[in-house]
Length: 558
Image 1: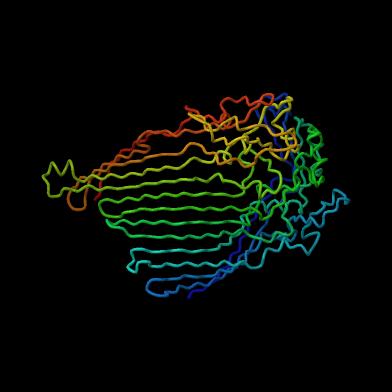
Image 2: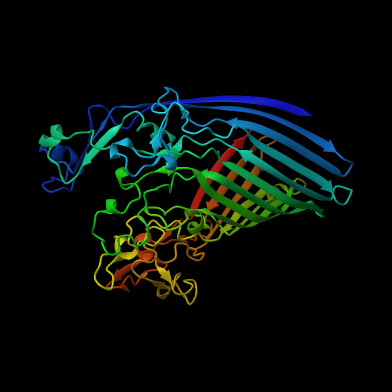
Protein backbone atom coordinates (compact mmCIF):
# COMPACT_ATOMS: atom_id res chain seq x y z
CA UNK A 1 0.00 0.00 0.00
CA UNK A 2 1.27 3.47 -0.89
CA UNK A 3 0.02 6.92 0.04
CA UNK A 4 1.22 10.43 -0.62
CA UNK A 5 0.39 14.10 -0.70
CA UNK A 6 1.26 16.99 -2.93
CA UNK A 7 1.04 20.78 -2.78
CA UNK A 8 1.62 23.29 -5.54
CA UNK A 9 1.44 27.09 -5.59
CA UNK A 10 1.75 28.91 -8.86
CA UNK A 11 2.25 32.64 -9.14
CA UNK A 12 2.23 34.62 -12.35
CA UNK A 13 2.74 38.38 -12.61
CA UNK A 14 2.85 40.11 -15.95
CA UNK A 15 2.25 43.66 -17.20
CA UNK A 16 -0.88 44.64 -19.04
CA UNK A 17 -1.32 45.31 -22.70
CA UNK A 18 -1.09 49.10 -22.75
CA UNK A 19 0.70 51.87 -21.00
CA UNK A 20 -0.56 54.98 -19.30
CA UNK A 21 0.70 57.18 -22.12
CA UNK A 22 -1.24 55.36 -24.81
CA UNK A 23 -0.01 53.38 -27.78
CA UNK A 24 0.11 54.00 -31.53
CA UNK A 25 -1.17 51.45 -34.02
CA UNK A 26 -0.63 52.35 -37.66
CA UNK A 27 -0.11 50.65 -40.99
CA UNK A 28 0.55 51.49 -44.62
CA UNK A 29 -2.28 51.70 -47.08
CA UNK A 30 -4.36 54.56 -45.71
CA UNK A 31 -5.28 57.57 -47.87
CA UNK A 32 -2.16 59.67 -48.31
CA UNK A 33 0.06 56.83 -47.18
CA UNK A 34 3.63 56.60 -48.46
CA UNK A 35 3.60 52.82 -48.07
CA UNK A 36 6.13 52.96 -45.22
CA UNK A 37 5.10 52.77 -41.56
CA UNK A 38 7.78 55.12 -40.28
CA UNK A 39 7.40 57.78 -42.98
CA UNK A 40 3.59 57.67 -42.58
CA UNK A 41 4.03 58.56 -38.92
CA UNK A 42 6.45 61.36 -39.78
CA UNK A 43 3.90 63.05 -42.04
CA UNK A 44 1.19 62.56 -39.41
CA UNK A 45 -0.79 59.92 -41.33
CA UNK A 46 -2.04 56.92 -39.34
CA UNK A 47 -4.46 54.17 -40.24
CA UNK A 48 -5.50 53.63 -36.63
CA UNK A 49 -4.75 55.04 -33.20
CA UNK A 50 -5.38 53.33 -29.89
CA UNK A 51 -4.93 54.37 -26.27
CA UNK A 52 -5.35 52.42 -23.06
CA UNK A 53 -5.22 53.44 -19.40
CA UNK A 54 -4.10 52.44 -16.82
CA UNK A 55 -1.25 49.96 -17.00
CA UNK A 56 -2.14 46.73 -15.15
CA UNK A 57 0.13 44.19 -13.51
CA UNK A 58 -1.72 40.89 -13.74
CA UNK A 59 -0.61 39.42 -10.44
CA UNK A 60 -2.26 35.99 -10.34
CA UNK A 61 -1.80 32.67 -8.58
CA UNK A 62 -3.53 29.37 -7.85
CA UNK A 63 -3.15 26.61 -5.23
CA UNK A 64 -3.17 22.85 -5.58
CA UNK A 65 -3.37 20.29 -2.75
CA UNK A 66 -3.42 16.60 -3.62
CA UNK A 67 -3.25 13.24 -1.86
CA UNK A 68 -3.48 9.69 -3.09
CA UNK A 69 -3.65 6.03 -2.05
CA UNK A 70 -2.83 3.07 -4.26
CA UNK A 71 -2.27 -0.64 -3.93
CA UNK A 72 -1.67 -3.76 -5.98
CA UNK A 73 -3.20 -7.18 -5.25
CA UNK A 74 -1.91 -10.44 -6.65
CA UNK A 75 -5.18 -12.36 -6.46
CA UNK A 76 -3.58 -15.60 -7.69
CA UNK A 77 -0.83 -16.75 -10.02
CA UNK A 78 -2.82 -15.56 -13.05
CA UNK A 79 -4.57 -12.35 -11.93
CA UNK A 80 -3.15 -9.06 -10.66
CA UNK A 81 -5.32 -6.04 -9.84
CA UNK A 82 -4.16 -2.45 -9.27
CA UNK A 83 -6.30 0.28 -7.77
CA UNK A 84 -5.94 3.81 -6.53
CA UNK A 85 -7.68 7.06 -5.71
CA UNK A 86 -6.37 10.61 -6.01
CA UNK A 87 -8.09 13.48 -4.22
CA UNK A 88 -7.33 16.97 -5.49
CA UNK A 89 -8.10 20.53 -4.53
CA UNK A 90 -7.52 22.51 -7.74
CA UNK A 91 -7.94 26.10 -6.71
CA UNK A 92 -8.95 28.55 -9.40
CA UNK A 93 -6.79 31.39 -10.66
CA UNK A 94 -7.20 34.35 -8.30
CA UNK A 95 -6.14 37.99 -8.31
CA UNK A 96 -3.61 38.45 -5.48
CA UNK A 97 -4.18 42.15 -4.72
CA UNK A 98 -7.78 41.74 -3.57
CA UNK A 99 -9.49 43.62 -6.42
CA UNK A 100 -10.81 40.43 -7.98
CA UNK A 101 -11.75 39.19 -11.43
CA UNK A 102 -14.82 40.03 -13.49
CA UNK A 103 -17.78 37.69 -13.07
CA UNK A 104 -20.96 37.70 -15.16
CA UNK A 105 -24.08 36.80 -13.19
CA UNK A 106 -27.27 36.77 -15.29
CA UNK A 107 -29.32 37.17 -12.09
CA UNK A 108 -27.75 40.61 -11.57
CA UNK A 109 -28.57 41.87 -15.03
CA UNK A 110 -31.03 44.77 -14.99
CA UNK A 111 -32.02 46.16 -18.36
CA UNK A 112 -33.12 49.41 -16.71
CA UNK A 113 -29.82 50.13 -14.96
CA UNK A 114 -27.48 52.78 -16.39
CA UNK A 115 -25.06 51.50 -18.99
CA UNK A 116 -22.12 52.58 -16.85
CA UNK A 117 -23.19 50.12 -14.15
CA UNK A 118 -21.88 47.15 -16.16
CA UNK A 119 -25.13 45.30 -15.75
CA UNK A 120 -24.64 41.70 -14.65
CA UNK A 121 -20.92 42.12 -13.92
CA UNK A 122 -19.42 42.05 -10.44
CA UNK A 123 -16.09 41.45 -8.70
CA UNK A 124 -14.54 41.44 -5.23
CA UNK A 125 -13.83 45.15 -4.93
CA UNK A 126 -17.51 46.08 -5.30
CA UNK A 127 -18.93 42.98 -3.60
CA UNK A 128 -16.75 41.37 -0.87
CA UNK A 129 -18.86 38.20 -1.10
CA UNK A 130 -17.35 37.52 -4.53
CA UNK A 131 -14.04 35.62 -4.15
CA UNK A 132 -10.89 37.00 -5.78
CA UNK A 133 -11.02 34.02 -8.14
CA UNK A 134 -14.41 35.18 -9.39
CA UNK A 135 -16.09 31.91 -8.43
CA UNK A 136 -15.43 29.28 -5.79
CA UNK A 137 -14.06 26.30 -7.68
CA UNK A 138 -15.36 22.91 -6.57
CA UNK A 139 -13.58 22.09 -3.32
CA UNK A 140 -12.53 18.50 -3.98
CA UNK A 141 -12.09 16.47 -7.15
CA UNK A 142 -11.74 12.70 -6.98
CA UNK A 143 -9.95 10.55 -9.52
CA UNK A 144 -10.14 6.73 -9.29
CA UNK A 145 -7.82 4.43 -11.25
CA UNK A 146 -8.11 0.67 -11.70
CA UNK A 147 -6.22 -1.84 -13.81
CA UNK A 148 -5.75 -5.58 -14.14
CA UNK A 149 -3.60 -8.18 -15.89
CA UNK A 150 -4.84 -11.75 -16.41
CA UNK A 151 -2.90 -14.71 -17.79
CA UNK A 152 -5.50 -16.43 -19.96
CA UNK A 153 -3.38 -19.43 -20.91
CA UNK A 154 -1.64 -19.93 -17.58
CA UNK A 155 1.81 -20.06 -19.18
CA UNK A 156 2.27 -16.36 -19.99
CA UNK A 157 1.63 -16.83 -23.71
CA UNK A 158 -1.72 -15.00 -23.75
CA UNK A 159 -2.33 -11.97 -21.56
CA UNK A 160 -5.39 -9.84 -21.04
CA UNK A 161 -4.92 -6.28 -19.75
CA UNK A 162 -7.32 -3.46 -19.06
CA UNK A 163 -7.72 -0.30 -17.09
CA UNK A 164 -9.61 2.91 -16.42
CA UNK A 165 -8.49 6.21 -15.00
CA UNK A 166 -9.94 9.64 -14.34
CA UNK A 167 -7.51 12.57 -14.37
CA UNK A 168 -8.37 16.09 -13.22
CA UNK A 169 -6.09 18.93 -14.26
CA UNK A 170 -5.84 22.67 -13.79
CA UNK A 171 -6.68 25.32 -16.36
CA UNK A 172 -3.83 27.12 -18.06
CA UNK A 173 -3.84 30.86 -17.54
CA UNK A 174 -5.55 31.31 -20.89
CA UNK A 175 -8.23 34.00 -20.74
CA UNK A 176 -8.10 34.48 -16.97
CA UNK A 177 -5.59 37.33 -17.16
CA UNK A 178 -8.12 39.34 -19.18
CA UNK A 179 -10.72 39.05 -16.42
CA UNK A 180 -8.67 41.48 -14.28
CA UNK A 181 -8.81 44.47 -16.62
CA UNK A 182 -12.35 45.69 -15.94
CA UNK A 183 -12.09 45.54 -12.12
CA UNK A 184 -8.90 47.62 -12.35
CA UNK A 185 -10.69 50.25 -14.39
CA UNK A 186 -8.92 49.61 -17.67
CA UNK A 187 -10.44 51.69 -20.43
CA UNK A 188 -9.41 52.05 -24.04
CA UNK A 189 -10.37 53.59 -27.32
CA UNK A 190 -9.43 52.86 -30.91
CA UNK A 191 -9.82 55.48 -33.62
CA UNK A 192 -9.81 54.33 -37.24
CA UNK A 193 -10.48 56.11 -40.49
CA UNK A 194 -6.92 57.37 -41.04
CA UNK A 195 -6.66 59.75 -38.07
CA UNK A 196 -4.12 62.55 -38.14
CA UNK A 197 -1.30 62.64 -35.62
CA UNK A 198 -2.14 66.21 -34.58
CA UNK A 199 -5.57 65.03 -33.39
CA UNK A 200 -4.14 62.42 -31.02
CA UNK A 201 -4.16 64.78 -27.96
CA UNK A 202 -7.93 65.11 -28.34
CA UNK A 203 -8.54 61.36 -27.96
CA UNK A 204 -10.18 60.43 -24.64
CA UNK A 205 -9.05 56.94 -23.54
CA UNK A 206 -11.90 56.69 -21.03
CA UNK A 207 -14.69 56.33 -23.57
CA UNK A 208 -14.94 52.55 -23.54
CA UNK A 209 -14.59 50.01 -20.68
CA UNK A 210 -11.91 47.38 -21.12
CA UNK A 211 -14.09 44.28 -21.07
CA UNK A 212 -11.63 41.56 -22.05
CA UNK A 213 -13.64 38.72 -20.57
CA UNK A 214 -15.46 37.39 -17.53
CA UNK A 215 -16.25 34.02 -16.03
CA UNK A 216 -19.78 32.74 -15.50
CA UNK A 217 -20.83 32.98 -11.85
CA UNK A 218 -22.07 29.36 -11.68
CA UNK A 219 -18.98 27.77 -13.23
CA UNK A 220 -17.06 25.89 -10.52
CA UNK A 221 -15.38 23.21 -12.65
CA UNK A 222 -11.89 22.26 -13.83
CA UNK A 223 -11.07 20.14 -16.90
CA UNK A 224 -10.82 16.38 -16.66
CA UNK A 225 -9.95 13.40 -18.85
CA UNK A 226 -11.17 9.83 -18.58
CA UNK A 227 -9.25 7.10 -20.37
CA UNK A 228 -9.72 3.36 -20.71
CA UNK A 229 -8.14 0.45 -22.55
CA UNK A 230 -8.62 -3.27 -23.14
CA UNK A 231 -5.76 -5.25 -24.71
CA UNK A 232 -5.06 -8.88 -25.62
CA UNK A 233 -1.43 -9.90 -26.13
CA UNK A 234 -0.37 -13.23 -27.67
CA UNK A 235 3.13 -14.64 -27.97
CA UNK A 236 3.65 -16.34 -31.35
CA UNK A 237 6.35 -18.62 -32.78
CA UNK A 238 9.56 -17.17 -34.25
CA UNK A 239 9.90 -14.56 -31.49
CA UNK A 240 6.79 -12.68 -32.60
CA UNK A 241 4.18 -10.93 -30.46
CA UNK A 242 0.69 -9.86 -31.52
CA UNK A 243 -1.40 -7.27 -29.66
CA UNK A 244 -4.96 -6.10 -30.27
CA UNK A 245 -6.52 -3.41 -28.15
CA UNK A 246 -9.33 -0.92 -27.80
CA UNK A 247 -8.27 2.48 -26.46
CA UNK A 248 -10.61 5.32 -25.63
CA UNK A 249 -10.65 8.64 -23.86
CA UNK A 250 -13.03 11.49 -23.14
CA UNK A 251 -12.16 15.02 -22.06
CA UNK A 252 -14.90 17.28 -20.79
CA UNK A 253 -15.40 20.41 -18.68
CA UNK A 254 -13.00 22.10 -21.10
CA UNK A 255 -12.90 25.89 -21.08
CA UNK A 256 -14.79 27.42 -24.01
CA UNK A 257 -12.46 30.36 -24.45
CA UNK A 258 -12.64 29.91 -28.24
CA UNK A 259 -16.43 30.34 -28.62
CA UNK A 260 -17.87 32.19 -25.65
CA UNK A 261 -19.68 35.34 -26.83
CA UNK A 262 -22.99 35.91 -25.05
CA UNK A 263 -23.75 38.92 -27.25
CA UNK A 264 -24.35 36.98 -30.45
CA UNK A 265 -26.95 38.54 -32.75
CA UNK A 266 -29.61 35.83 -33.27
CA UNK A 267 -30.15 34.07 -36.58
CA UNK A 268 -32.34 36.17 -38.90
CA UNK A 269 -32.43 39.22 -36.62
CA UNK A 270 -31.03 41.64 -39.25
CA UNK A 271 -32.33 40.00 -42.41
CA UNK A 272 -34.54 43.03 -43.15
CA UNK A 273 -31.94 45.52 -41.94
CA UNK A 274 -28.56 44.16 -43.21
CA UNK A 275 -26.84 47.56 -43.09
CA UNK A 276 -28.35 48.67 -39.80
CA UNK A 277 -26.66 49.14 -36.44
CA UNK A 278 -25.83 45.69 -35.01
CA UNK A 279 -26.04 47.09 -31.47
CA UNK A 280 -29.81 47.33 -31.90
CA UNK A 281 -29.97 43.54 -31.98
CA UNK A 282 -27.55 42.32 -29.31
CA UNK A 283 -28.92 41.04 -25.96
CA UNK A 284 -26.61 43.27 -23.87
CA UNK A 285 -26.14 46.54 -25.76
CA UNK A 286 -23.80 48.29 -23.35
CA UNK A 287 -21.14 45.60 -23.88
CA UNK A 288 -20.85 46.29 -27.60
CA UNK A 289 -20.54 43.44 -30.08
CA UNK A 290 -18.97 40.95 -27.70
CA UNK A 291 -19.52 39.78 -24.15
CA UNK A 292 -16.87 37.07 -23.73
CA UNK A 293 -17.96 34.87 -20.84
CA UNK A 294 -15.95 31.70 -20.28
CA UNK A 295 -17.22 28.49 -18.78
CA UNK A 296 -16.31 24.81 -18.84
CA UNK A 297 -18.73 23.44 -21.45
CA UNK A 298 -16.61 21.91 -24.22
CA UNK A 299 -15.75 18.23 -24.66
CA UNK A 300 -14.06 15.80 -27.01
CA UNK A 301 -13.51 12.05 -27.29
CA UNK A 302 -11.22 9.54 -28.96
CA UNK A 303 -11.83 5.87 -29.77
CA UNK A 304 -9.39 3.55 -31.50
CA UNK A 305 -8.63 -0.03 -32.49
CA UNK A 306 -4.88 -0.55 -32.19
CA UNK A 307 -3.00 -3.56 -33.62
CA UNK A 308 0.69 -4.35 -33.18
CA UNK A 309 2.81 -7.16 -34.61
CA UNK A 310 6.46 -7.21 -33.57
CA UNK A 311 9.51 -9.40 -33.69
CA UNK A 312 12.70 -8.73 -31.76
CA UNK A 313 15.90 -10.63 -32.48
CA UNK A 314 19.57 -9.91 -32.96
CA UNK A 315 19.41 -10.43 -36.73
CA UNK A 316 15.96 -9.56 -38.06
CA UNK A 317 13.50 -7.32 -36.23
CA UNK A 318 10.36 -5.55 -37.33
CA UNK A 319 7.32 -3.72 -36.00
CA UNK A 320 4.02 -3.23 -37.78
CA UNK A 321 1.36 -1.07 -36.11
CA UNK A 322 -2.08 -0.06 -37.33
CA UNK A 323 -4.60 2.31 -35.75
CA UNK A 324 -8.19 2.83 -36.82
CA UNK A 325 -9.52 5.78 -34.85
CA UNK A 326 -11.96 8.67 -34.61
CA UNK A 327 -11.50 11.99 -32.77
CA UNK A 328 -14.69 13.98 -32.23
CA UNK A 329 -15.49 17.10 -30.24
CA UNK A 330 -16.59 20.73 -30.14
CA UNK A 331 -14.76 22.73 -32.74
CA UNK A 332 -14.56 26.45 -33.34
CA UNK A 333 -15.14 28.48 -36.45
CA UNK A 334 -11.93 27.25 -38.08
CA UNK A 335 -8.79 29.10 -39.03
CA UNK A 336 -9.59 32.62 -40.17
CA UNK A 337 -13.26 32.24 -39.17
CA UNK A 338 -14.48 34.13 -36.10
CA UNK A 339 -18.23 33.59 -36.37
CA UNK A 340 -20.07 30.73 -34.72
CA UNK A 341 -23.05 28.47 -35.44
CA UNK A 342 -26.60 29.21 -34.39
CA UNK A 343 -28.24 27.38 -31.49
CA UNK A 344 -26.57 25.38 -28.74
CA UNK A 345 -22.84 25.35 -29.50
CA UNK A 346 -22.50 21.95 -27.83
CA UNK A 347 -24.81 20.37 -30.41
CA UNK A 348 -24.30 22.38 -33.58
CA UNK A 349 -20.47 22.44 -33.42
CA UNK A 350 -19.84 18.76 -32.57
CA UNK A 351 -17.93 17.02 -35.32
CA UNK A 352 -14.66 15.50 -36.50
CA UNK A 353 -11.67 17.38 -35.08
CA UNK A 354 -8.85 18.71 -37.19
CA UNK A 355 -6.24 16.29 -35.84
CA UNK A 356 -8.32 13.17 -36.59
CA UNK A 357 -6.63 10.60 -38.86
CA UNK A 358 -8.79 7.56 -39.54
CA UNK A 359 -6.06 5.14 -40.60
CA UNK A 360 -2.41 5.15 -39.53
CA UNK A 361 -0.05 2.35 -40.59
CA UNK A 362 3.64 2.19 -39.66
CA UNK A 363 6.10 -0.56 -40.58
CA UNK A 364 9.69 -0.51 -39.35
CA UNK A 365 12.34 -3.16 -39.94
CA UNK A 366 16.02 -3.89 -39.45
CA UNK A 367 17.94 -6.78 -41.03
CA UNK A 368 21.56 -7.56 -40.12
CA UNK A 369 23.12 -9.87 -42.69
CA UNK A 370 25.64 -12.49 -41.62
CA UNK A 371 29.18 -11.24 -41.00
CA UNK A 372 30.72 -14.24 -42.84
CA UNK A 373 33.52 -14.50 -40.29
CA UNK A 374 34.54 -17.94 -41.57
CA UNK A 375 34.69 -16.93 -45.23
CA UNK A 376 37.67 -15.89 -47.34
CA UNK A 377 38.89 -12.32 -46.90
CA UNK A 378 37.54 -10.90 -50.17
CA UNK A 379 34.14 -12.56 -49.82
CA UNK A 380 33.87 -11.40 -46.23
CA UNK A 381 34.90 -7.85 -47.12
CA UNK A 382 32.35 -7.54 -49.94
CA UNK A 383 29.36 -9.54 -48.72
CA UNK A 384 29.69 -9.46 -44.93
CA UNK A 385 28.64 -6.80 -42.43
CA UNK A 386 25.65 -5.32 -44.27
CA UNK A 387 22.60 -3.99 -42.47
CA UNK A 388 19.33 -2.68 -43.93
CA UNK A 389 16.74 -0.59 -42.07
CA UNK A 390 13.60 1.22 -43.11
CA UNK A 391 10.35 2.82 -42.08
CA UNK A 392 7.18 3.03 -44.16
CA UNK A 393 4.21 5.19 -43.16
CA UNK A 394 0.68 5.60 -44.43
CA UNK A 395 -1.72 8.15 -42.90
CA UNK A 396 -5.18 8.80 -44.28
CA UNK A 397 -6.11 12.33 -45.32
CA UNK A 398 -6.74 15.18 -42.91
CA UNK A 399 -10.28 16.57 -42.46
CA UNK A 400 -10.80 19.46 -44.86
CA UNK A 401 -13.52 21.47 -43.16
CA UNK A 402 -12.02 22.11 -39.70
CA UNK A 403 -8.55 22.78 -41.14
CA UNK A 404 -9.46 25.04 -44.09
CA UNK A 405 -7.94 28.50 -43.78
CA UNK A 406 -11.04 29.80 -45.57
CA UNK A 407 -13.16 28.80 -42.55
CA UNK A 408 -15.74 26.14 -41.84
CA UNK A 409 -17.97 27.54 -44.63
CA UNK A 410 -15.18 27.37 -47.23
CA UNK A 411 -15.11 31.16 -47.36
CA UNK A 412 -18.45 31.93 -49.04
CA UNK A 413 -17.90 35.13 -51.03
CA UNK A 414 -19.01 36.92 -54.18
CA UNK A 415 -22.56 38.02 -54.92
CA UNK A 416 -25.94 36.44 -54.40
CA UNK A 417 -28.86 36.14 -56.80
CA UNK A 418 -29.80 39.79 -56.19
CA UNK A 419 -26.23 41.10 -56.27
CA UNK A 420 -25.91 41.27 -52.47
CA UNK A 421 -22.35 40.80 -51.10
CA UNK A 422 -21.95 37.35 -49.62
CA UNK A 423 -18.75 38.13 -47.69
CA UNK A 424 -20.99 39.73 -45.07
CA UNK A 425 -22.98 36.90 -43.50
CA UNK A 426 -25.69 39.40 -42.51
CA UNK A 427 -27.25 39.22 -45.98
CA UNK A 428 -27.70 35.45 -45.71
CA UNK A 429 -28.10 34.63 -42.01
CA UNK A 430 -29.34 37.98 -40.73
CA UNK A 431 -26.50 38.01 -38.22
CA UNK A 432 -22.88 39.17 -38.62
CA UNK A 433 -21.97 36.73 -35.84
CA UNK A 434 -23.27 33.55 -37.48
CA UNK A 435 -21.33 32.19 -40.43
CA UNK A 436 -23.31 31.70 -43.62
CA UNK A 437 -23.09 27.97 -44.27
CA UNK A 438 -23.81 26.31 -47.62
CA UNK A 439 -26.76 23.97 -47.98
CA UNK A 440 -25.66 20.44 -48.86
CA UNK A 441 -27.94 19.01 -51.55
CA UNK A 442 -26.02 15.73 -51.77
CA UNK A 443 -22.93 14.06 -50.36
CA UNK A 444 -19.91 16.00 -51.75
CA UNK A 445 -17.87 12.79 -51.79
CA UNK A 446 -20.14 11.17 -54.39
CA UNK A 447 -19.83 11.33 -58.19
CA UNK A 448 -16.24 12.61 -58.26
CA UNK A 449 -13.42 11.38 -60.46
CA UNK A 450 -9.83 12.19 -61.34
CA UNK A 451 -8.51 15.18 -59.41
CA UNK A 452 -11.99 16.26 -58.29
CA UNK A 453 -12.15 15.53 -54.56
CA UNK A 454 -15.40 17.41 -53.81
CA UNK A 455 -18.53 17.57 -55.94
CA UNK A 456 -19.28 21.31 -56.35
CA UNK A 457 -22.90 20.67 -57.39
CA UNK A 458 -23.62 19.52 -53.81
CA UNK A 459 -23.11 23.05 -52.42
CA UNK A 460 -25.79 25.75 -52.65
CA UNK A 461 -26.44 29.10 -50.99
CA UNK A 462 -28.86 29.09 -48.05
CA UNK A 463 -32.22 30.81 -48.14
CA UNK A 464 -31.83 34.32 -46.65
CA UNK A 465 -32.77 34.25 -43.00
CA UNK A 466 -31.99 30.57 -42.67
CA UNK A 467 -28.68 28.71 -42.79
CA UNK A 468 -27.08 25.61 -44.18
CA UNK A 469 -25.11 22.78 -42.62
CA UNK A 470 -22.50 23.73 -40.05
CA UNK A 471 -21.08 20.20 -39.89
CA UNK A 472 -20.31 18.65 -43.29
CA UNK A 473 -19.80 14.96 -44.03
CA UNK A 474 -16.32 13.64 -43.33
CA UNK A 475 -14.45 15.34 -46.18
CA UNK A 476 -10.78 14.39 -46.46
CA UNK A 477 -7.71 15.60 -48.28
CA UNK A 478 -5.09 13.37 -49.90
CA UNK A 479 -3.41 10.67 -47.85
CA UNK A 480 0.21 10.83 -46.73
CA UNK A 481 2.61 8.06 -47.79
CA UNK A 482 6.34 7.96 -47.15
CA UNK A 483 9.19 5.43 -47.23
CA UNK A 484 12.60 5.94 -45.61
CA UNK A 485 15.45 3.51 -46.11
CA UNK A 486 19.05 3.18 -44.95
CA UNK A 487 21.91 0.79 -45.68
CA UNK A 488 25.00 0.24 -43.48
CA UNK A 489 28.26 -1.53 -44.26
CA UNK A 490 30.65 -2.44 -41.45
CA UNK A 491 34.36 -3.10 -42.02
CA UNK A 492 35.95 -4.89 -39.01
CA UNK A 493 39.39 -3.57 -38.05
CA UNK A 494 40.26 -5.94 -35.23
CA UNK A 495 38.95 -6.08 -31.70
CA UNK A 496 36.07 -3.70 -31.12
CA UNK A 497 37.23 -1.33 -33.85
CA UNK A 498 35.31 -1.00 -37.08
CA UNK A 499 34.78 1.41 -39.93
CA UNK A 500 31.17 2.03 -41.01
CA UNK A 501 29.66 3.48 -44.17
CA UNK A 502 26.04 4.73 -44.09
CA UNK A 503 23.64 5.77 -46.83
CA UNK A 504 20.26 7.12 -45.70
CA UNK A 505 17.37 7.89 -48.06
CA UNK A 506 14.48 10.03 -46.83
CA UNK A 507 11.49 9.60 -49.18
CA UNK A 508 13.50 6.94 -51.01
CA UNK A 509 11.01 6.66 -53.93
CA UNK A 510 10.91 10.46 -54.37
CA UNK A 511 7.12 10.47 -54.02
CA UNK A 512 5.89 14.05 -53.34
CA UNK A 513 2.73 14.77 -51.38
CA UNK A 514 -0.09 16.72 -53.04
CA UNK A 515 -2.08 19.36 -51.18
CA UNK A 516 -4.92 21.86 -51.61
CA UNK A 517 -4.51 25.58 -52.16
CA UNK A 518 -7.18 26.71 -49.69
CA UNK A 519 -7.69 30.14 -51.24
CA UNK A 520 -8.43 28.64 -54.65
CA UNK A 521 -9.52 25.04 -54.29
CA UNK A 522 -11.48 25.31 -51.03
CA UNK A 523 -13.25 28.62 -51.57
CA UNK A 524 -16.93 28.90 -52.51
CA UNK A 525 -17.07 31.97 -54.76
CA UNK A 526 -20.42 32.89 -56.32
CA UNK A 527 -21.42 35.32 -59.06
CA UNK A 528 -25.10 36.27 -58.98
CA UNK A 529 -25.88 33.20 -56.93
CA UNK A 530 -24.02 30.71 -59.15
CA UNK A 531 -20.77 29.00 -58.18
CA UNK A 532 -18.12 30.64 -60.34
CA UNK A 533 -14.95 29.06 -58.91
CA UNK A 534 -14.30 26.26 -61.39
CA UNK A 535 -11.35 25.02 -59.32
CA UNK A 536 -13.41 24.34 -56.20
CA UNK A 537 -12.78 20.83 -54.89
CA UNK A 538 -10.03 20.10 -57.43
CA UNK A 539 -6.72 18.76 -56.11
CA UNK A 540 -4.05 20.70 -58.06
CA UNK A 541 -1.42 18.64 -59.84
CA UNK A 542 1.29 21.26 -59.31
CA UNK A 543 0.83 21.67 -55.54
CA UNK A 544 3.40 19.23 -54.20
CA UNK A 545 5.96 19.13 -51.46
CA UNK A 546 8.65 16.67 -50.39
CA UNK A 547 11.64 15.25 -52.26
CA UNK A 548 14.21 12.52 -51.87
CA UNK A 549 17.05 13.40 -49.52
CA UNK A 550 20.24 11.31 -49.54
CA UNK A 551 22.75 11.47 -46.71
CA UNK A 552 26.13 9.73 -46.77
CA UNK A 553 28.20 9.20 -43.63
CA UNK A 554 31.45 7.55 -42.59
CA UNK A 555 32.12 6.54 -38.99
CA UNK A 556 35.01 5.06 -37.10
CA UNK A 557 34.27 3.02 -33.94
CA UNK A 558 37.13 2.33 -31.53
